[in-house]
Length: 293
Length: 237
Image (cartoon, rainbow over all chains, first blue to last red):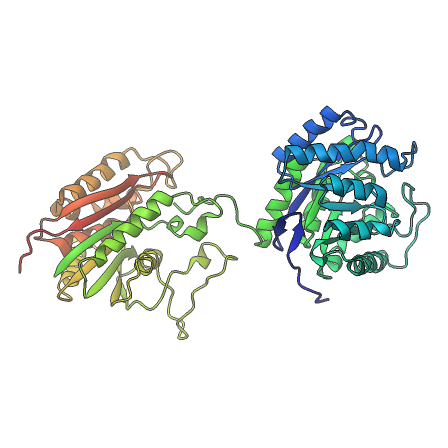
């Protein structure tokens, strides 16, 4: 498959050339997310987490107020309360840092963009079609992800695909096209296979293996792999022992041309994606002296 | 006759693209650029670049530096000779680049001197270079010992300190006899690859009692780098 050439990726006022890896640090404003639940539920703790991920090399801070897994209902008003004011506070502290709002609802996306978000990370595959309109209205970016038709906050139940990557391409490219139709700048559109979303572990391994089919479309590809169940099931390890497996999957995706890496462990992810980018010849090594003196 | 000379080291890291995002040795590069640019001020008829390598040989200046051997993947492979002539040895390639950076487009000769050539042969080569045109400038690419510390490429050899100090003194004082007297065996043991080029330089400057300005001397990675400009004073016919 020859495919289209990757172009520039624009987020906020930033411009990322092809080959320049972008790390998105996760900041949850939730009491019940799967990884270290509740650790940044308090606003001061969440702001400390923002300082940390930026210091560790994140290009984007991804703020979310609703866990992906089913659980206590978080309505629109509550989700806005959790993230909009916080995004405004982050914007105030860091005028130039990129902020992403992890939401599947257009009302929340609107408040997040008004507060300063540069990107709407719609993990639930365009369940709310009006999110694209909000992104267009604010000149924001949009992540178009694959869920296999799952409703937000549901777990996969006996999901099956004739060809999971074909389904991923079908849904994400359709959503990207819809976003362009809605007026979103194509250079601000990102596609995401959404590991674990509407997929069992075999499916997530397959899309990891075949990620180059997504990058060959020319759309910028985001991967969200961090400490997920497919890593845990593959290695037989609990959530607090998944970093190594996460980084292995990260390297494989980076090698195949993924451009945005959503991660809890920012330092390690930064190291992996920069190392792979240097191996690919996309970025320069930091400092080379060995054997050259 | 020789109208000016410059001395620069020839480590691969002199090529900016080889050190990655960090320039690592900007002061060294600047000193080398300035020394090479100084050669142009006397309006030479020809600039000869001399460096040590496998065997004595001459290139007439068409080829450039090929960094791809040091950094495959960053491109810039120079294959401009369709006949497949060998690419320039490192010191000549770096010297040629310094002339390019100085904006020199006049005649140039790239002279490799064999690493095993004895001092007398090196001096003779230098004298020949000095007499090769009415106004000759010489750029000698030469490194001191690569054994200047435990982290040096050749590990520490305590003799490297006095050795390089004596080379520096000889260059500073214009003591050409001392340069010609450098022990070839000791130089090889100390991985001082510049020895033949120093001696070509000394041969080219014989009888001129040069005045020297040293603009850089350091060993940031355990190899002695010396940058100097040498101006002949008493020209003998």
